[in-house]
Image (cartoon, rainbow, N blue to C red; front, side, top):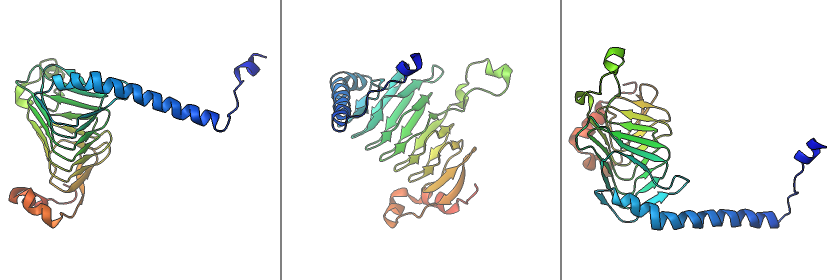
Length: 234
């Protein structure tokens, strides 16, 4: 009898339960939009040194990105950020800053930990689980107990039109060139030339994308030279 009671289920009624589903989705979206517009987005803007128009924080339960410490945050126009994101400044760093360019989207969950500077360009899609301008703690257990040295802190610079795949990691003093693609779960510990696809741990070039002619001048001579010299397997 207990098993029968536990297994009881109200049958699906065509039309009625379809309407209930859409009503539930509509109610949740309206409720989240209300809090996003009147509460979370203005609060997030209050923590930014500059924030462009048409910011969109995708409210999926947390409400707004978690900000640890007091980093200097600069957000461009039409940026979309999921709320399950952490932006943290390291206490060992000085004046840490995070810059996100126009029309860039940061999908959840992303952790950005900055001791000096992290710059993300425009028109990017960032699905990385971790972006950090330092390699973390020392592998030597005796030195690991000490604080992270300022000498290890560099700058992470992610160019325009970069796609960083799901759960990828970008750490250290590195530059990811314009148009590059970082594969899913790739670990980037050295600079990536523009318009190259990298994958693996550590990340290596697996393919070179063709550069549109109109982008060559935009890249500049130095970046274009790095693209030409890059070889698959580097």
